[in-house]
Length: 385
Image: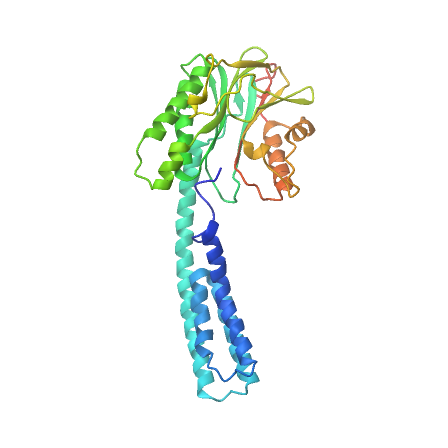
């Protein structure tokens, strides 16, 4: 899931724009090397002064102050070297070129610094907004919820990203501890709006709907309303919003040693019990939220699975399950759970994060949302991680 907020310090941080900006960064140095080729060849009689003078100005367009300064210094070095090689010192043309180069370099560095500062201020403001939005949309789950201890983690696929279409929540209700983890198909603002709609419906319905199926139905209805609401956005976003769906799994930890699940097209949760991991596969697979037309047969029901004191439950998005290395091998999540069964919830999520980074060599392609809960019925409630 691509995130809404990114950390690139310049425009064009992705796709074709990134390629164009990379090429733009190479242009000043390519021009400087062209001047070197001309000046140290029989064609040195050609007047190359304006080409060198333009390099700092071109660098200021696509590079920061340091890059502009480097381009200016490189151009000045070439100007001095070529004047020495061609024995042109003493001519008015050489001194005119150097003075012009110095003036353009000073102006370019000053302009680039001002633009860079403005962009950084804008980026910092966007980051502050993103952090505030994340705290509302993806707030950390409480460390203690009734008979379980819980921890959550959101990992962005790109450095500096804040929020996207992955979602999670855990709430203690009169019916038990209820949790949701989901993944929106889509990106950008439509994905964030869909995630917010599903989370809002979940946070409200868990407190008055006894049936877990009705909770997920409220989430589906909220998603349908969100998709039907006109937003005045561009055509691509409208099409993406209309086609979006959400895979989600809702869990409920009851007073007994049981966890109930309703899985709507999501990756199956894992339970660690007795040092072994088991995937909680649904007996009757259901489509994601937003694709209710594909539901056939009798009404869905929550499915129950053993979840005794000492067991660990992990809800996660497919950013974990589909993480691959260079050999196209999937991340061994069950093995990681078994290897870290003695760690606390927060420690486990941190170790899992580190394992994902190592496995993908820092090239994660999808965001990750996770909730881990440990059943600790017999543990004093005031003890903390």
